Amino acid sequence: MKIATWNVNSLRARADRVEDWLRRTDADVLAIQETKCKDENFPWELFENNGYEVAHFGFSQWNGVAIASRVGLDDVERTFSEQPTFGKGGKDPVQEARAIGATCNGVRIWSLYVPNGRALEDEHMPYKLEWLRQLKENAARWIADDPQAQIALMGDWNIAPLDEDVWDIDYFREKELTHVSRPERAAFEAFLEAGFSDVVRPHTPGPGVYTYWDYTKLRFPKKEGMRIDFTLASPALAQRVGDAWIDREERKGKGASDHAPVVVELD
DNA sequence: ATGGTCGTTAGACGA
Image 1: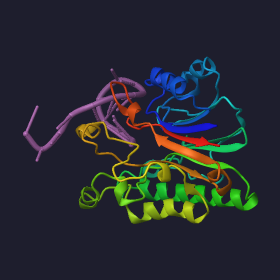
Image 2 (image 1 turned 45 degrees about the vertical axis):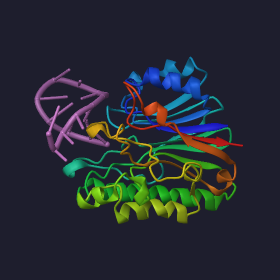
Image 3 (image 1 turned 135 degrees about the vertical axis):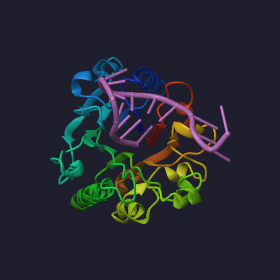
């Protein structure tokens, strides 16, 4: 079984690309982030015409997550328990469309779009950290309740856990940029301490291996990217991983997302 | 030339 995650940066703008990619890659499950649409604008036919069931969670032009599967799509959950809300500048807090879960052929898939902290002192940063903490609480409980549970936490984590996960750590430090700060990295590592593991890195060792390249400043041709999209697997699922790769080719050409798809093959 | 882009959408805002 082949499972994948991809921040498509608008599903409607990327519909042809996504369809071509699904056919080419022969993926069984795709966790999608940043659909950037409501249900009424969602391209349902794209998936149905290609033999996939799909569940979507999105209610505005922001965020939006989905799971497409051709091996079953059961027990769909939108948001995780105690998922933090966010109210900018004291506005009424809203539950953002950043997490959707479904069981696909025995594997509990979560498609996750972790909040962007924006800046170290921005009000989005504590939101990001608390969002991750609550997700980790859930994830730890899921494997405590069932040590054999096969769980894949897939998505855009907006964190570069290692210095080699950005093209120049000194640039990030000098500019005091997000994604590499100590609290963000600690929030990520808490998942590893809870028993989850990054099942892609062992098959795609760095340095210089990334999943995202900013559209600006010619980051892609200059090979200046970031590794911020991850699949963290529960112990039982990690045992099944036979191979994994980052589809860097998909970042090329006109009309590409700024993120590459990340694929995990299960035995 | 120390910048260089895209998406949502219709003037900004988000990444």
